[in-house]
Image (cartoon, rainbow, N blue to C red):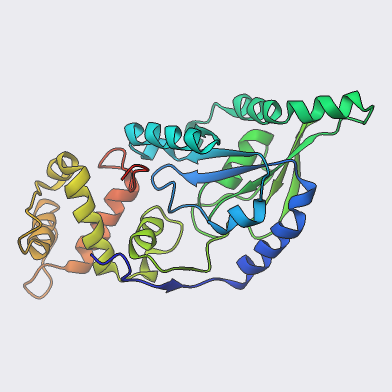
Length: 289
């Protein structure tokens, strides 16, 4: 696969507006909580945030850790530590880290608050800005921290479009923002990764290419899971693509279409299996590769 095969440009107008608003309001927050998807921590972040957020203290939360490869998640945590960022892997479906996250944020700003107290200033609540790409779990996290439905959550990109301030307790507030993607992805692999984790719709990419990329990646990194599910293993130096389609169709008992394998149906089944987590924890990128 050519890493520059795709140049995906689909930037909705509300994202451009939201990015400008974040840049104008970064001054009113004390820190940033950046959410990335644990299955693709690099691909699932908007690198323009680095310019906007400047030197604000940052906590990186790797969401959907239950769907990721736990061994690779540990490598990402080491990577963030090397970069000087605090990080935490969280499972938002079975979320138990509310107090831990709030305490981590308070600890990050404790020195600043102590200095304000020494100056006789009124100690106000810490305000943290929540940022991330669509469908990374921002609204779900906010609702869990607030212990109420304070933000609209949904399993599709772009549900939250407005920015809002949510009071968690007397010491902690959240500034919610919409999911914002980069204006375009010029790299094919990154485009595939964000499609496979659901941050953009899969059909923005050619589904044939996305299928080939994903199956090939599983064969390279999760061959046992691929074999267990489909009885599929192949040598990438040979013409394996049609055989992969045929094998998946055979194992899943898919009816033929006009006497031939129904390639569209195979893709649908494969992508559903990925979404349902039938292969176990899958991470699409390694920080040290």
